[in-house]
Length: 296
Image 1 (cartoon, rainbow, N blue to C red):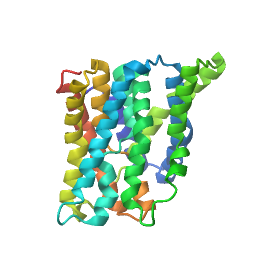
Image 2: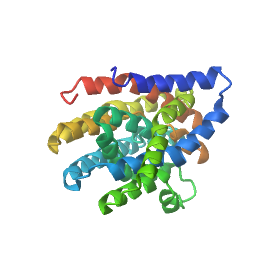
Image 3: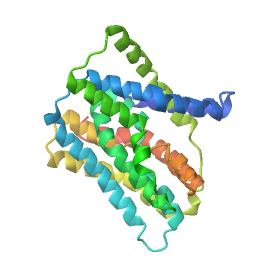
Image 4: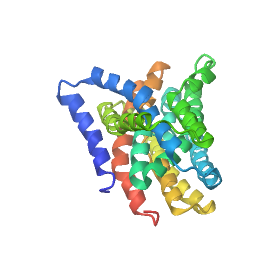
């Protein structure tokens, strides 16, 4: 658990600063944009472009990551077929079961496996983020869901990941001053991103659909990690990759889920509550998953 403590303390620090100091929500909204559109993409590009990638040795890890994502989507969608489930709450909250917090994922991957771990999780994200985004938007799309391809094509994280892969596979190497500058910019991404996650925590109206909330959070924090453990064995992943897959499956949900729900007319307070509880659960459950398995 001590492995994750510094990262989760940064989340707590962001929460306290936002709630009890003059560094209130507007400042953190600007910080989120800075991380999302500049710092985070630079970190991804730099990590992937400078890492030693062996596609043949990574294919099974990517298959496992995609299988985790598809399993979460299938289970979350199936909840909508249960009798008595509030349709608006389900459409809004379904994304919580399979989306993941990229800031926490990258920070944890770096602590577990260093730059190689960052590269692995970034490649998983490159495949899973488009799938997760489409699956999250689809239930909320009240008017046909047009504009999918444009939104995905403009995603800075996807662009940076694909750019890093292209640079790596083509053998492109930046001049040393430029490489050092990018590295220093990227170093700011994880601490600031984690603090921004904490600043965005809020309690919501989970009482609107408590059973649905429990089911969605159970998929995110219980079923998907178990599924990842099974996949790691079926795919015979090396231990470092198996550990990354398990960490990916046990991630807290994406903090941007609330923004998407509000933007598309969903139940924002319900999703905000799910995001908050998922983040808090991650502080406890994720280290336990890593400690309770032979992968750690």
